[in-house]
Structure formats: structure tokens, C-alpha cells
Image 1 (spheres, rainbow, N blue to C red):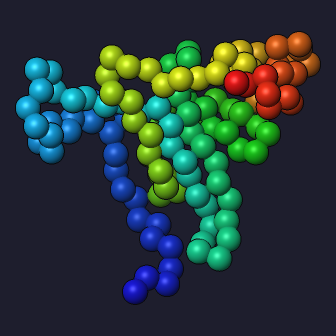
Image 2 (image 1 turned 120 degrees about the vertical axis):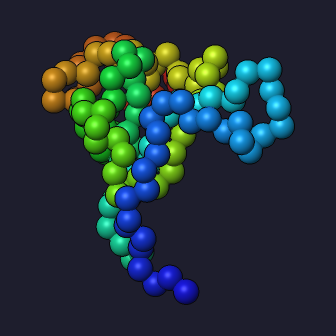
Length: 128
């Protein structure tokens, strides 16, 4: 029985995860690309969650509470990775337009600029 958090590095691909070995034959191999990671730091009794996300500009960002910062692609795979989110090639995740524009208008420190577009994030109903 585990009583401690497992914090061993599990290597995972950012691109071209091939699941054809575990699926019934398809005309094209089912290839998947990573678009987000939920990360957990701390232990079983408490900790902190962050997210690593692939932006619409094909750059990786780390989301930590109210801060969004550019991150090195090489830092996406880490011991803190907890949940992995892949999309099948040829499809795209649904990203609300307000979130896409907020990422595009964040300042260099990762804070949302004071604009009409990013203020929509304060109103949850605007994301529907």
C-alpha cells in the first residue's frame, strides 16, 4: 500500500504518441499530440497544482494561479506531471475565444492586460 506520493519521472512524448498497438486496425495510425499537462507539487497531504499548456502560437506556457508564463518545451516533461491531455491528429481541442485572446494579450510577466477583451475572463458567463 502506497503512503507516499510517487514522484518518479515518467517520460512521455509531446508529439506522435502512437496507440496503434492497442487499437483495432485503422486506415491511418491513431497518432496523438500533447496539448496540456496538469502538474502537482507537494505530497499526499497537500500541495499545489499548475498546468502546462500548448498555446495557439505553438509555444508552451505554465499557468500558475493568476500568472501565465512562457516555458521551455524541454520543461514540459517533469516529475510533477499528473494528468496528460492529448488530442488526436487532425482534430483540435475546443478553446473558448475569450481564453485564446487572453493568452494572446498577456504582458511579458504573464498578467492579463487591462483591455475589454481580457476583462471577459472575470465574467464566467462570457466563456459559454
